[in-house]
Each structure stands twice: as C-alpha cells, then as structure tokens.
Image 1 (spheres, rainbow, N blue to C red):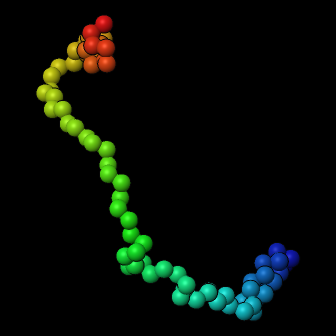
Image 2 (cartoon, helix red, strand yellow):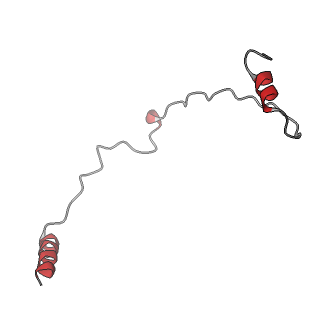
Image 3 (cartoon, rainbow, N blue to C red):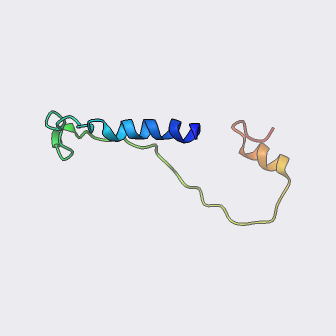
Amino acid sequence: MKILLAAAVPLALAGCSQPFEPPLATPLTRAADPSTAHMAPPGPAVTHTSRSIEAPGDWRKLNDAQAPGGSS
C-alpha cells in the first residue's frame, strides 16, 4: 500500500500542476531563410584504380610492390 501511495502522490501532483507553455517562436530564424545558408566545403579528390580479379598471391610481394618505397 505504501508503494502505491508513493507512486500515486507524484502523479496526482503532476496532474494538478499548471501545464508548460513553450516560449514564442518569433525570435527564432526561419528554416527557409537564405541568409543562413553557406557553401559546403569541397570534398576530397577521389581517384579509382581498376584492378582485375586474380587468384591470391604472395602477400609479402604484393605489399612490397604497393609500398611507397617500391620493391624492397
């Protein structure tokens, strides 16, 4: 009974309280206002290298061939 009373009192007090009135939205900026828009920064330059499908090879040779220093 005490648990029911402990749960009912806050619900009753919240139900009797004055409802929340949100502030007026007049000082907010309109969503369609063009003065708030700006250019997006350019994206990274992306290049694509086409590679043919082939059987798995020696990983050490592949890694060495594609390393910045070339074959080592």
